[in-house]
Image (cartoon, rainbow, N blue to C red; front, side):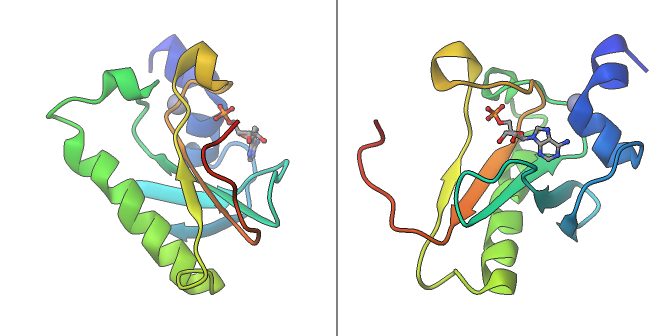
Length: 118
Ligand code: AMP
Ligand code: ZN
């Protein structure tokens, strides 16, 4: 295993080495509760594969990244906010405030969001 995967918090969650409140999973994607929720409902969907940022998206991982949206739809249905609405956010690098360099989709709900974001 390379160093990035060895030390990555989300890879550790994917390997079951550190706990997380998992709410949904399939063979490629895991969804769990954000440890510091920024909205009343706040989940993270991660690919099990270590993909650092959106900049690393390519044709080889397109299907897996597409599955993040399937996971978001399933989570929204499961927690009852599909119809009221929710926001899917993927931060990339410094200007977006990405802190953990294992690509993840924030699935956020339970409030009315403003647009455009500040
Ligand atoms: P980002 O700024 O897009 O990289 O978001 C990282 C997110 O990961 C933040 O919302 C954190 O609260 C969340 N987070 C960090 N560590 C954990 C963890 N061990 N379990 C669940 N969520 C986490
Ligand atoms: Zn990782």
